[in-house]
Image (cartoon, rainbow, N blue to C red; front, side, top):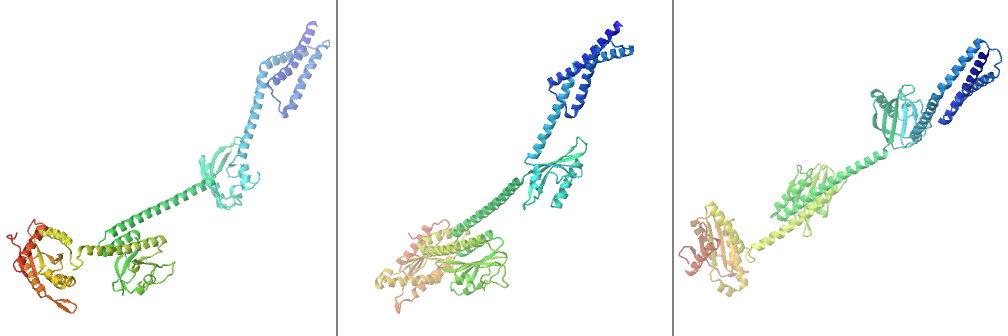
Length: 583
């Protein structure tokens, strides 16, 4: 019995030690790893721990009750229990830390997952963007606080509903669901700009939306995630920028048009300054108006010298809407001395010089020259003539009037500078200039030029007898006779005092002799009057010369002058032809 006794004591001791050691080891490792037991496992933990401790107490007390009879089977069971308990303790000691550490890590992962989910939820709810999740039928599963605040809904109102059920515009809901289906079919993210109508706002909002598919980890179902950013300000800024660019382009086009207008007007002023006749002035104005107003027609009317009618002097464009000749009273611009506009939007006075039926826009601008109206500039357009075009037309009219006035002054000054004030014949400077041209033309064509040099006989005594005023009448009478006797392209000039020169191109020597001889007779037979008084007649001596190739103006005139002096020396009142024997 002795071995059995000690065997029983040792078995109970080892089992009790093992039962007490297991919770102690687990408690120490829990303390070291700071692992906690989930609330739902606390009861199972306490019951298991109590069972183990009570088992330990049972075997511990059994050591002191070993005097009781123990059967062989009971002893075997005790030995086996002791062995298993000891093995469990020995096995638990090295791996218990790993088990407890795994539990702690699992708990930390769970807490980290919760924190991550909370952060994600806070990010989605507090972020300045709209976020949502939908199922495969486009029913809303989640939407963040930004969406709630924008559409004034609570967190549960849209759940389980499709966009077409809560959006005010059915077309907008249909468009959103179509985009959802595109994401589900392609399984690829979709980026788009959506126009959204917010309740309580008349102006739509614009969202930059990103829709993407993902799989629900819990159920494996396909979901649609979406994030929308409000880009209304950017869209409005872009529109404002586009509008500013459009306005800038319009202003650039207007500046270019103004630049072209200034160039045309500048060219017009330059050309008008260079014009030598009224016809050239009118052509310049017609050219400028056709450039400035390509879709308009117009014409220039000038009052006749008689002041009895107005006549068209120039026109441009495809349509003539006015009479070519009319009276001054038929135009309101001429009658009033101010601009007259007739258009569909300006029912002004209708000028009687317009042809029936009157349509479109008509603008009559008076031309003022030296303080009085001298004509009108008439513009016709099928559409309205804008104020800028009216201003340009007035500028053209003023410039034309100034150019006409300047041309008149220029022609008068030119006439005075080329004419002799007493006889109105050309003067010596003009004669010398024109003779150079005539000689050059004659040499190029192989023809000749003739010159007649004449001097009134005994004019000094005539002047002394009758006085300067009467002598001037003689000079004027002779000038009229010369103009009457010569051809239109011949040149008659007062050389100085009582000397005159006539240039006659393209004339044979024989014809020249006959013409000059007849002129001598006409001078001799000319009757002169000073009022009622008949003056004494005059005679003149003539010298003639014919040009040769290479001869200069000076030599040519000297030859005719020498021939005239020879006529004086040989008796006066005769015609002498130049010969080389005169020195």
